[in-house]
Amino acid sequence: MDKNFHYDEKHIGYLFAYCGVMAAFIQGGAIGRLVKKVGEERLIFSSLLVVAVSLAMIPYTGGLAALLVALALFSAGSGINRAPTMGLISLNSPPEEQGATFGVAQSAGTLARCIGPVLATFLYSIRTHCRILCQPELAIVASVLCLGVPLPR
Picture (cartoon, rainbow, N blue to C red):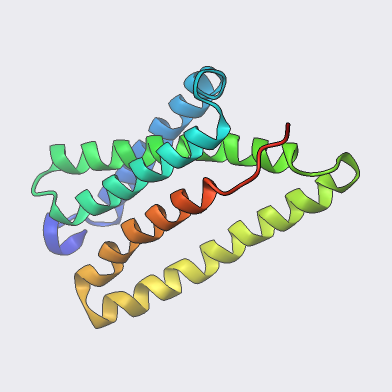
């Protein structure tokens, strides 16, 4: 951020707050209607594609307006993703194993949040755009994998 926009920690904090507010609006207002209208599987797939598009846009934003659009898409996609993902985990887990299943899912998310920054820093050290250009592909792979999740009948 400092190289392209000359933002300091304060301004980057504003961008994080913007992302949080955008995700909160999605999770607080639209997610229930979207799940009912579209269904968990398609919603997860679509949200991950939105995340992929937004991640592909971020390195090429030339100004604040374009960056805010890309971050809004990212926030919407990631905000939409969490609830239906947890819903599918719940629907695919026997009632007596739901606590353990949610625990494993939360642990996997925590592990990803620990490994992700380390891997991103390594990729960034190799080539500045490598870290960002690998992220959309990972989101696309995740979206395709979610299509294979069996839905309970």
